[in-house]
Structure formats: structure tokens, C-alpha cells
Amino acid sequence: MTDLVVRRLLIDLEAPFERHWCGGDAFRSALFNALSMSFPVGEQFFIDSVRAGFKLLPPERQDAFRTEVQGFIGQEATHRRLHALFNGHLEKQGLVNDWGPRAQERMKLLDGQDPRHMLAITAANEHFTAILADWMLRNADLLGSTDERLTTLWLWHSAEESEHKSTAFDLYQAAGGSHEWRIKWFRRITLIFLGDTLRQTIDNLRRDGTLWKWSTWKSAASYLFGKRGLVRQTIGPWRDYKRRDFHPGQQDSTPSVRWLAEHSDRYVPVGA
Image 1 (cartoon, rainbow, N blue to C red):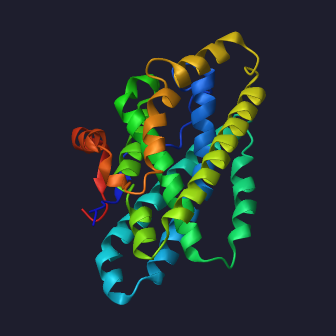
Image 2 (image 1 turned 60 degrees about the vertical axis):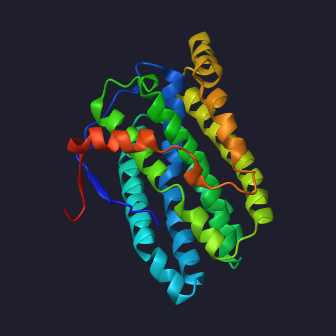
């Protein structure tokens, strides 16, 4: 089991931030803004899924997972709250969050379904966030923000996503989830996640007035497909999930452990 610490981040998100907060780069700002727009709804879904999956386990298995599940819920609830504050500033900048409401409507299709489907969806999404988090921590300079609050927000979130990347997966396995359904949902979530990310990023750029600028597309090409590009460096870890013997713990968590150790002045463990 994973020992998950709930942390209170020592940053003030009440003050506004620059429109192009990623080092003045329109594309990077629009991309991360899009991801943040999905977090409040997504994190709540993950919390609900893990709670429902936990209830499927017999009492003796619940005891083994109880502390980890509590830590997972605490971490995700904190992410949800802080990104809701972040998203409030985006709304004031004129951006419109279509991803969150669209995801909520999609989730209604799962009402009454076996909770293991929700766990499989959560495990797939957690894999996406974990490999994105690992890439961000290894390439922190590419975030490019000069606002220390936002750098801390995104890298702390990344560190915790890496830290709890096994929780939903392990619950799914413990609840008797099959490999076949795990892969079916992973393929579906791949298409949904990438489609929603692209759609919201483009809409953010359109509202920002930077969609058709050459600098925007040049940045996108470099950031996604360059030597240290996001897509280029995460395609291998993405494929790993499809292996029958895959487990999230096989992926190196060193960047997460290192960031949390080196930046302990930026958070306080809850209850400490």
C-alpha cells in the first residue's frame, strides 16, 4: 500500500495572473488552462469512483486499503479546490470551460453501471495524469512560468499525481476487474481525453485571439513533438499500460519524490 500525505499548499491564488502565464507563450498557457478546466469535475469523479470501488471489497481487504484511499481522496479534493480557484481567473479572462460540463453529461451514462467500470476509467485517466506529471517534473523548465505560485501549483500537483498513480489501479484489480475491460476503457479514454484536450485548447486560443498566429503553431510543434516534446516522450509509457503485466509502480517515481523533498517549504502536511 502507498502512504499518501495530504498537503496544504502555501500559495495565494486569490490574486490574478497573466493571460499568457507560461512564459508569455500562448499555446502552452492555453493547453494547461484546458487541462485545469477538466480537473474539478474529473477529480470529483475519481474520488467517487475510488469510494465506490472501496465499498466493493470485503472488510479484510478494505482494512488494507483504508488509509491509502483516505489519502487519495484528500489529495484529489485539494487539487479540485485549488484548480477551481485557478479556473475562476480564467473565466475572468474571458475563457469558457466547455470541457467540465461536457464531462459531467458523459458521466451520467455510467449511472447504475458496475462500479468497476468507473474504477477502470479512473485508472486510465490516472495513467494519463501520471505520465504527464512525470514528464513535467523532468522538464520543469519548459513550463516557463515566472509566477512562482503557478509553478508550485503545477509541479506539486504533478508530484502528487505520480505519488497516488497506483491507487485506482490496485482497487480495480482487488475488486476483480478484468484485463480486457481495463484495456477497453483505456482505449476509449485515450480518444476522449485527447479529443477533449484538443477541443478545449483550440477554443482557448480562439477566445484569446492567438489561434491563427504562426508563433502559436510553432510553439505547439516544438512543445509536443520536439526533442523533449510531450507526445514524443510519453508515447512509450502510454503503450506500457496495455501490457497484461503492467503496474503503475513499474514507472520511476524519483522526480516526484525529489520535488516533494526539495520543496517541503511550499506545503504543510495536513494534521502536522
